Image (cartoon, rainbow, N blue to C red; front, side, top):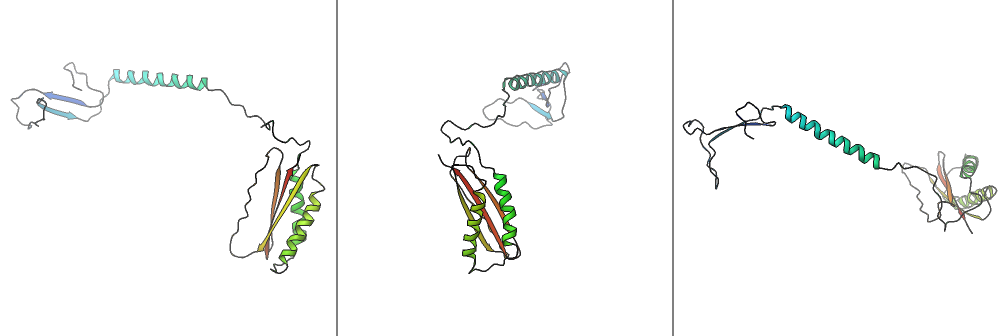
Length: 198
C-alpha cells in the first residue's frame, strides 16, 4: 500500500517508495524475475484513517444484523414430558422408588448394625438379607411387577470397591433402587430391580 502525495496514509502500515536512483545510501535488493522498484522503506507504525474506521463500523454492523436474523430464525425449544413410544409397556401404576429406598435405609442399619465380618457366615447372611428385603418390598410393589434383589457384602479394609450394573429394559415402566450401608467391619450394597411384565 503506497501513500499518496495528498497526505493520506495506509491503514495498517505506511510504505514509502523512493524512485530517485541518485540516492545510493540504501543498497538495492535484486529481485529475481521482477523489475526493481527502487529504494523501499516500510514503517510499522499503526496509523488510523477515518474511512478505515467507518468501513470497519459498517462491517461489524452488518455482522450484528446477520447474527440477529439467524437468532430470530431459530425456533425456541420447549422441554416437555417425554412420552413413551407406542410399543412401550404402559403400566397402570408405576413403582414408588422412594418407598423402596426408605425400606432399605431402615432395614440395613437394624439388621447389620453390630454384625462383624465373618467369611464363613457371609453366604448365608446374604441370602437371609435378600429374602427379607424381597418380602418387605413385595408389600409396596404394584401388580404385574417382578423384582430382583442383589446383595453384595464384603470386608471393610483399606481398599476401594465399585459395584456396577447395566440393564436392558423399558425406561418408562422399569426402575431400580439401591442403598449402601457400612459399619466398622463390613460394607453391604443392596440393589432392587423392578420390571413390569405384560
